[in-house]
Length: 321
Image (cartoon, rainbow, N blue to C red; front, side, top):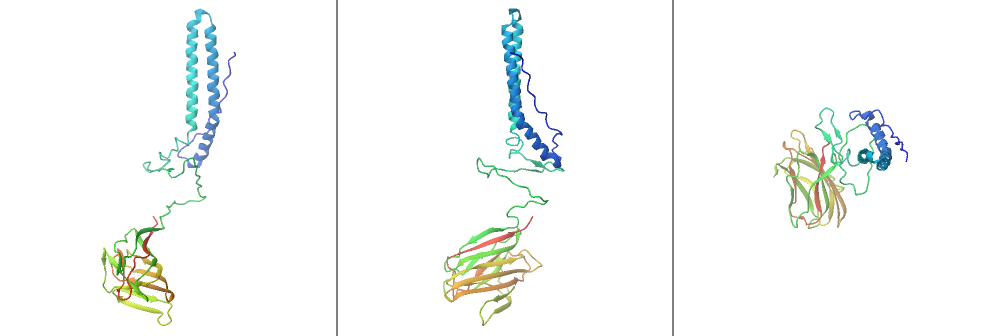
């Protein structure tokens, strides 16, 4: 059997990949990976060629004259070496084919580092992707900084349901420096009696309720007789309405961490009671100089008390970073 000429292997694409050259890195890596994919079959062909030639050499050596036995043995060893070389090349090709799958881009390894300080690195994790699934993420055609989904979103901080016949609902330490603005979401809260009474509010400073006359507020309702009621320097502020009917709405706090600046709130209450649909809005300011740590909702109990119905949820508007 004649010696077979080894098949050719496509040359490695040039120029070489430069990891610190962002402008060319992606295209050159793509060209290199494409070359590897084609090279797998070429490497296998070379390995098969080496094997066939080595086997032929072995057969020729065995058939040679007795005085060339040692030479034949040497050729056998040479053939074995070539077989190993072919296997090594095939293994190298198989390993190279994993680049971008289990080696260079394994999510156990960082894939980017800071040019000025290489101790700053980043990873992309694929843990949340379902098995057997490939997810594709498109980069937008513009510059900018990536943000997390909750960077400027509302974040739930606390939730309670009132207890039966309670006069107060407390969130005395729910505010912090992490958020300046908050929303209290009230869902289907009910009281014990009709026509009910206004829910008043006081704020807490360092967890202590401030019952001093530091509240300016105004209330507006659709009632024809008394459309607006204002109070200055009061010891509490109107915030909501409680009766034996489902009440929902919101209370928004603004600038709770301010010291020399105003801290204010706004509430919007909707009740569907025995007397029909009812709504009222309240606005106000806390005049104290300290940051607010939380708040208390309370009733006198002379007309209505809280029932264990509905929920009160506190959300913070996260600061952008």
